Length: 255
Image (cartoon, rainbow, N blue to C red; front, side):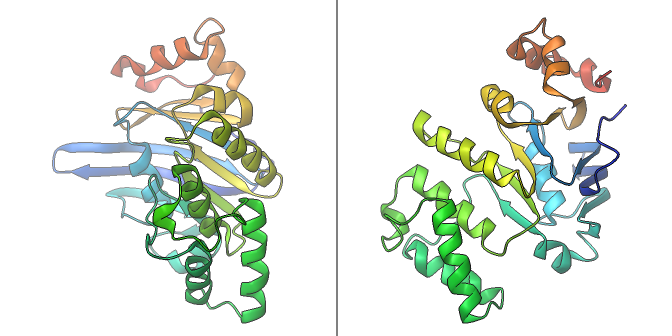
C-alpha cells in the first residue's frame, strides 16, 4: 500500500515508471505521489534507480513505460507547461564555469522570457534565499563546492516553481554547508512541494515529512519516518540496510 495524504493535491506523480536499457531495468514499475506542500525524501543505495526516476519525472529522459506528471502535466506530452511549474537540480548540476552567478541567472531569466523588472526582482530574491551576495560577481569556476550547489539551487528557484526535484543537493558539502541547505529546504517547504534525493539519513530525520525508498529499480518503502525507523528496531541505518540488502524486500511497503 502506498502512503500519501489523500487531502493534498498531487503535484509529483510517478505512475508505473520503468526505464529499460536492453535487458537491464534501471527502474521498474515505480509508482508514488507527492502531495502539495510535502517534503519527501527519496532514498536508495547507489545504483538503485533514484536519478533515473527523477530524470523521468522531470521529462529529462523518456520512460520506457508509465507516466510522469508534474502539477497534473504529463512530462512527455506537455513538458513545457510542466517545466514552468518545476525547478530541477540534478546531481552535479551543469553550470557555466566562465560565467558569474549573476551572468548565469540573467541568462536563464532571459531564456525564460522574463521582463527586465521581473528578472531584477527574481535575481535579488534567489540571491537572498541562497546567500550568494558575497560571490555573485565571481567566476563560477572559482567557487567552492558549497557555493556551486547554491548557484545550482538559485537557478532552480529563479522562475518561482511550485515543485522542486533535487538530486543529492548536499553531496560533497561540509557540515556547516549541509546545515545551511537544511535550513533553506525547511524554509522552501513552507510554500513548495519538494522531492529530495539523499544518502544522509540524518537529513531525512531533520527535514522529511515522508520517505520513498527504491532498491534495484523497485519501490520498497513509502511511508513516514517513524514507520521506517520501526523496520530497523528504532534504527534508521538498520532499516535502510534491511530494505536494501536483499532484492526480496522489493515488495515491502509501509503498514
